[in-house]
Length: 266
Image (cartoon, rainbow, N blue to C red; front, side, top):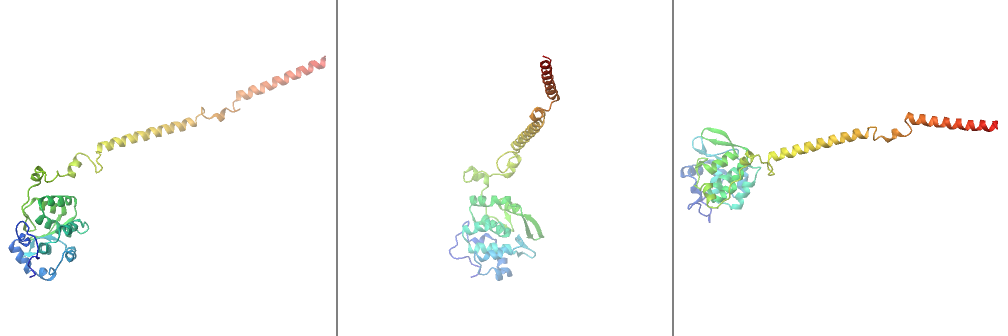
């Protein structure tokens, strides 16, 4: 039958996986045209093409009509793909509605520790999602959607299976403490682990070093252009030396003339 769970499927939370969707909503999905026309004989591979065509998430709208998102979720519960395939769905960052579909399936079927470990990294995803409900279309974000999966009892008109709170899992050492980016931002830490204060100190030190270097360079340039270092100026350019040389030359010529005169007289 088209509406029966695949043979060999494992029970989820002690029951048929399809029974995780309420009976009223499940029957409306079976009666919808989208389920009959597009969800027939889908596999884990061909379901990706249908998920890429989604333009919104949500439960029921209008006259209790199920959304396409809800029909594909029930189809996943029916065929029950392997965990590795669902994780690959979740890692497809470029396809946000496929990621949203995998998130709600993981929340409904995986163990509590795996749910927190796989979905908490998506709280850093701030892309927009269209949500369709009884009131029409509204705007939400992936991080808000994932947070509702982890904290609220009903998401997309489906009751979420109960899971223990994260605090209880931490007390039982089943999961490590959560690393919050907001706490790092409040402490002034950046992504490389250094604080903003240390960065400002290093910047001020580098600025002071550059200033001292520029000052020393300017001083050196001034000294190099000063007369103390310009030795070429002291090579036979002073008027005193030229005068002394001219005087010494005149004295020598006077002495030679006087000697010649005295010799002639003798």
